Amino acid sequence: MSENVDPTLRSVELIRTATARYTARNAAGAEIEFGHGEDLLSPVELLLAAIAGCSSIDVDTVTARSSEPTEFRVAASGHKVVEDGANRVDGLHLSFNVAFPDTEEGRKAAGMVDRLVNLSHEKYCTVSRTVERGTPVTHEVHTAVGDTAG
Image (cartoon, rainbow, N blue to C red; front, side, top):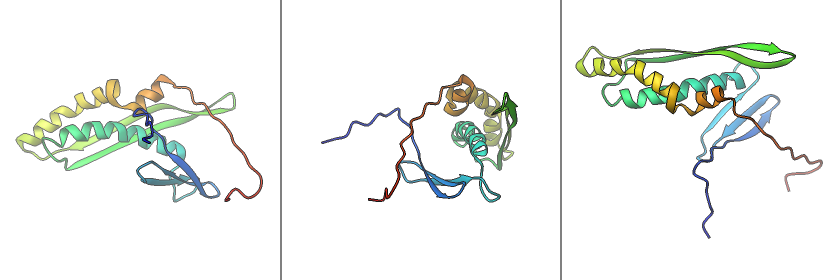
């Protein structure tokens, strides 16, 4: 019997590997380790990476059809704000630094970057558009005591 799969669903599973250390894994098996520690990205840094990565994919996918970049760096930043004892990040900002060869194709690709960044922001980047919209986050909790490895 075939399983009904929702094509709109996006998900990851998070597994604790040590205190304040986690691995997130998607259905395809791709993993990223994060948490709290000098050698790890923090959850906020992952959010910044997701915003930068989403727009980067939009820009890179289109411009690479014309020319491979000689440099492609995106800095993502924001400021931690504490309001009424609650934390959040404000002033999210992306800074694109993209260069192409001095060829007809490279100039064509370079000429598209600004428009593509704007299109990504206004229409295509699911991550930044979700953050800007302020989508609610819900949760459920299941706890157990005793041997759960059964």
